[in-house]
Length: 152
Image 1 (cartoon, rainbow, N blue to C red):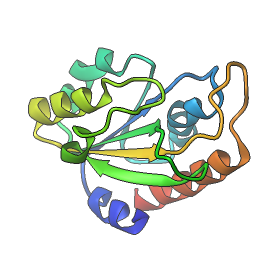
Image 2: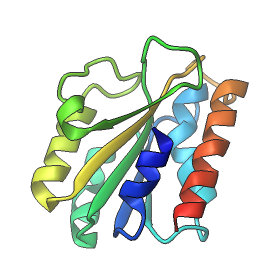
Image 3: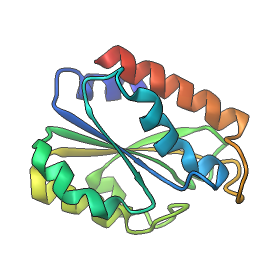
Image 4: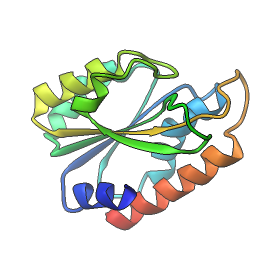
């Protein structure tokens, strides 16, 4: 699944959007990963925190071919598991850990840019206030970091 993601990103003008709350454990996976990628990938990086909708104009300005949203999502799976979803599949999901409007955001980005919108959802272990990333989510984040650095 991640190999297919790498193929979709290779050679494309890409925006990587990290979504989540830095103070809520595994919910921070997107923003932390985006911060780790600064200066290491050929992509526009946006740490959107909890307000990704505030970055729509910034995303449109880049005229991306691909927008990659990285976020913690309840998948009903083991902590650290990953799902890669496109905008069509996002429409059917309403169980985001932080923001149920992410599917709407993905559609707005796709409609506003014509870009392919992909979401990398990571199953959290804990989103408790003031907790750190769990070991399984941290390992997944490292895998994603390596993949994204190697794609650039």
